[in-house]
Image (cartoon, rainbow, N blue to C red; front, top):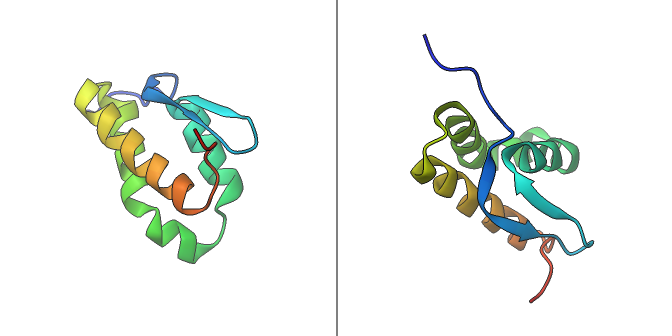
Length: 85
């Protein structure tokens, strides 16, 4: 039996969005992805990021959280949704 998913875990690092928002937790990232990327084509491209996000929520392992944070950040950067530093 697998563990319950815990999306309240913190991301490996805070992600700052172009609109001033911030992603701090797996839940923040999950909610944003669900809200902003609704088409099937987009979800197919996000497959890896979503799987990594779910794995991190399940295991809570630091390595899995890092693995989830990186592709989320890449997807948001490619869509110009990150704040420029």
